Length: 267
Image 1 (cartoon, rainbow, N blue to C red):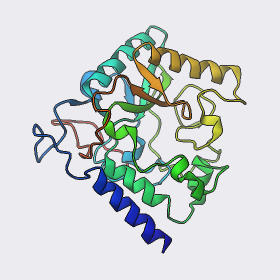
Image 2: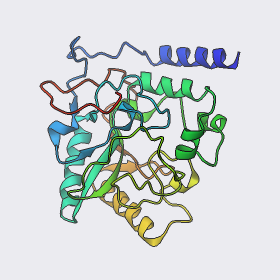
Image 3: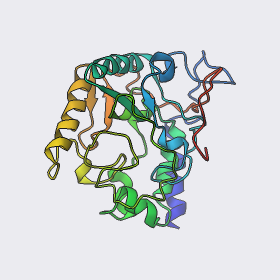
Image 4: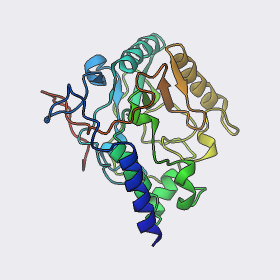
């Protein structure tokens, strides 16, 4: 009964945000992405992409609906601002790496539905070791996400020239997410990406001086280029002012036209 009620709420939410009716007049059946959105790879191909929701290395442990290609898509203004961040970081010997960018509304609905399913001990260990799954909604998982407006992204800093992190389904992680992920090429930020824990707060207790320094570097360089951090997640930033502050898009993320990017394993 609970699951049916939760699904009904998801469907009502999807209807309220116009799910499936967000194709712009400039979109096409082959790729309904509005002209105001771009592939980050076309703006700055040097920014590394590790698009977790296109594969299985995420808290659902399965490819997420709407992610039909492992590509970062953003409104043009946000992508160009990230290019400026990347240029500044390169002078310090670092590079950006993005985990998630625009997120289709259907993906958000899938997260809400996932939160009503039975617990997964592997996902718990790697993403919410100190919480029960029932605590995630709505504290960490909401019915709407700023990512669906196209100007929000999840990212980190890596040493310039770092080899991409290996593609994995996340099942081999032995450490809880409250420790840095040794399989991730990120600088040490104190927790893994998508860790539902107080330690993932941008400013928090229990960090080493190096971890705090790395977080502050990311916070400062992003702020200099008009990005605002979400204080509960050190990796989460939104470009300001948002071009679409009240619009939640749902077009799927498709391969770039003429693209040679490799799909994520199992996507």
